[in-house]
Length: 221
Image (tube, rainbow, N blue to C red; front, top):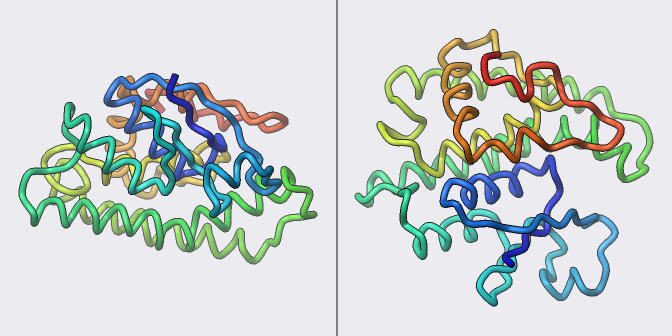
């Protein structure tokens, strides 16, 4: 059995889960308290981070590398375009959401609203919350601009870039930190990707002691 060591609201873990589900690769989910690393977990990934995927007798780490390997070995359905220019755009947007969006938005809001409590680190820092809520507006506006010119974020076909964006947004939607009224275009894009079968396990997630937002699992939100 393929096994993914993950944290339910981790955007990087969710990106890998979405790719695996889209390609109908079955996995066993194992929740990992990576902030309390045990020797076995550090042997799987000395970086001490999730996700870690045990797949076909291999142990894989780093979400983008995992997703691209899965894509190369299991190219159907295709999540990377065929031309170099189009693949560049997908990778550029994946980096945008994995790096810029995560550091400016997701890490701040998830840390303060979720992980501080989970890790026993005390009360949220309101400055980080305010900064994250301010920054997400800029990112939604950027997505709006892209989607006004394209059917999907990177072009006319759904790609890994859409999962890279939907993963952190779904985590933030769980805690009600996405203003879907800011852009009907972005909301329609998310409703479309949220309705895919690959999203079902994501929408079934439950974080102990923290109920999801009212619209989280609602496909017609």
